Length: 351
Image (cartoon, rainbow, N blue to C red; front, side, top):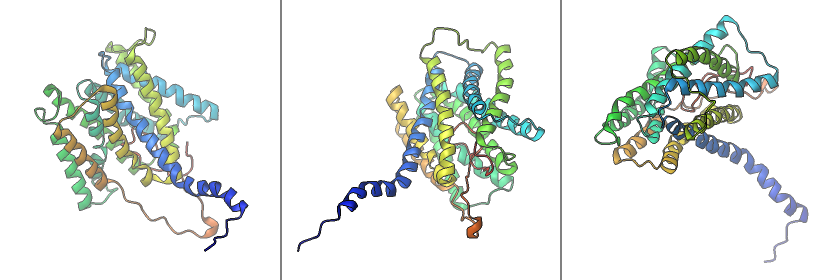
């Protein structure tokens, strides 16, 4: 049977039409993978930064200076003033304490004693901590499935915290609890934002304000305790690592904001899996880490727990055609994709 060839115009338009069809699917998936890999890279960079004994507060100040310069430069370019109302300042202080000063100081201390891959697994417990906290303050409901996810997360932690079975250095076991404290802080920040909201501010504005407050708090503490790290020195791997980690964190965070607005918060939340998996992968490739059987079982338990405790999509309210408008679900505050604080939304100001 003879088949008639497609007209030349159809053949010419086919690649463009196919690309137009696939782009809405391929673009967000590609961005999700790139952001997960980018954010995960901050864990081995942190491990390198603490390798020569740089103190936690000194590294925290260094990170905050880089973040303020990048985000402040962006705000200056947009000519957008930082709000200084009492409610905004309270928000900045809470996000600074629970989202930066306390957890990052703990993470820098723990990273000096724990493998980078193990840190990547532990940070995924933010979602586990968020579930009971959210129920306690009345912004979530009990679910047996999500309770099962919490139990799986606890199993993973027990496996990691057993020094003779998993950690290369048994002396690092107490620092697992320090890393868990950091995750609990991130979860507390998320629950606070989920209950109180972000005062209508965009996430970049919140992050800049919180970074400034955190810098004001951390700088005198680092100076008084002799922990300041002098940047006017010959840089080696640790100095480059903490700078790169700070830049990657800001870039990935801004990309995450775009992804939430483009594809929704539930799709963007899948970055948690990628950041954990890539964190283990980067640690093996860049740092030569290897793990015992219990660590791999813990990783599987954490992934399963994450799948159960992740928020489910909520049906969008039906709107008349004249009122239909795209909704930008943007997440305020935060330095890591695993942060449960990535749940509050702001429709008025995406940046």
